[in-house]
Image (cartoon, rainbow, N blue to C red):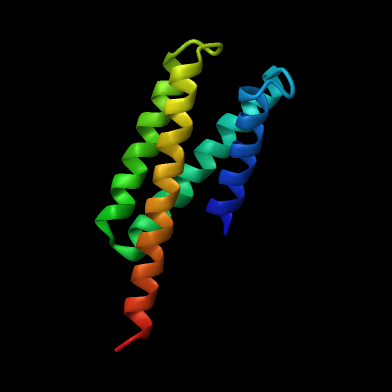
Length: 108
């Protein structure tokens, strides 16, 4: 649940900046980065609990997307879209992997 809330906070703040609903202030940028870090910590915990390699791959995608966003120019559209795509792919991988792991644990 923490993973999902952190993702939603980062997603809403990031999309608001991407679609120019508001200008990303230093505070909003910090909120976006902290939400991403909370996502990464929750993802590491999920990977340890589920022992699933797909969750580890999703964690690597989150790290790659974070590094991409930190090293690219803030106003450039293509790296920002690639960042959003990587994060959406990572969240989808986590949701599928956790769903399959929990289903496998309950169905005999």
